[in-house]
Length: 178
Figure 1 (cartoon, rainbow, N blue to C red):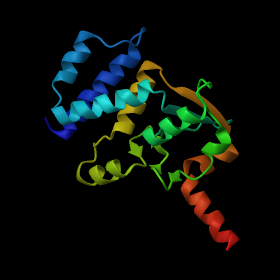
Figure 2 (figure 1 turned 90 degrees about the horizontal axis):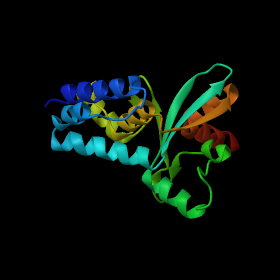
Figure 3 (figure 1 turned 60 degrees about the vertical axis):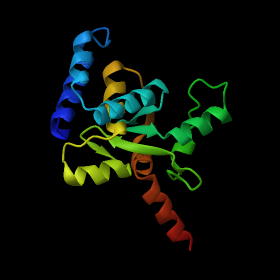
Figure 4 (figure 1 turned 60 degrees about the horizontal axis):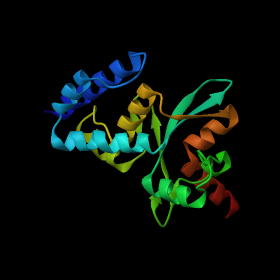
């Protein structure tokens, strides 16, 4: 199955899940996903694991209601879990405003825009060859949204650009200090 077709199948399943009152997958969804290649099914399973770990955050700015999604990387998830086992979500918005790169473990999160964009390297590399390409973060956001398994955060409009472009903000801040 082509990447275009796989993306269509995944989007169809996610759209249907979102319209169901219980938001549970059915046998029909399983049959549709069974048509995916092993590689594409692995991508879907990786996305499902991110959702299961609670790694998907929907960030909404007020009062504009603009939003994007933040997907924590596995290294961030494990570090956060070790740091605070007693916290349900372990969310500290001030830490989310910081630079996304943890030099020891790579990016600590990826920003995802609902209209088909992810800040991860895999998306950038595959989107050049196939405009409908999907990375595990895009699929995870779609799955979390369709099944309502995400954490919703609200921020002020003034923090929106800082959170969305944290790396650029941090770099420009460092340039100003030099």
